[in-house]
Amino acid sequence: MSLADVQSRLVKACKAAGRQVDDVTLIAVSKVQPEDRVRAVLAQRHRAFGENRVQEAEGRWTPLKAEYPDVRLSLIGPLQTNKARGAMKFFDEIQSLDRPKLVRKLADLAQELGHAPKLMVQVNTGEEPQKAGILPTDADAFIEQARSMDLPVTGLMCIPPVDETPSLHFALLAKIAERNGLAGLSMGMSADFEQAIAFGATHVRVGSAVFGARVPG
Ligand SMILES: *Cc1c(COP(=O)(O)O)cnc(C)c1O
Image (cartoon, rainbow, N blue to C red; front, top):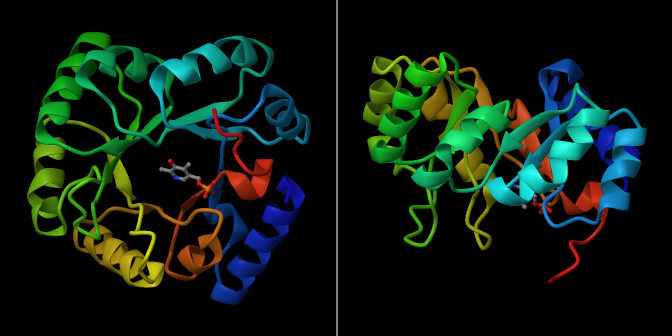
């Protein structure tokens, strides 16, 4: 369990899939991890990180970004509209665009701030009631809505159901992206990122395999 280990597995998975290593971004998911583990990964020159909560991310990364200005942060958790302004300013990418109300809010903020981070649409590929994301049947219209409001949608993100074969979900996400002309695919976590790479992932979100198990609390 280490950054080097995950990187070498990523390289192998790219080779096996006939893909370029540079076409896959490893997002190290640092949520809840103690700072010494995060610093250890920064010291190994890794710069792409993911967090799932806006306030926790701001608390951790405001000082760290002063030290490491080239850090790139992705928001991978649900975004409440009342935290959207802060998130638009703080993150380089928001992967959890998951409902029409949030699209309208981000579009208004993009106008006002004159900029927007890269955006990915979260698709609820397993159609799980408790999970965020647009249903697969609604995805095309939703992407169109975001585009019509000039939001920079670059790809799709999914979190497959824990008890199902992830590859079916990766394939579905890739299909929706392709028919909408989207190049980005954020899929694959510690347990299945190699499979996700085989199905075309351009971003893998890996937490525990990089940092070790998350300490509960
Ligand atoms: C926590 C989290 C991850 C990382 O999970 P691991 O199993 O620790 O790799 C990836 N994506 C999202 C959306 C997460 O919330």
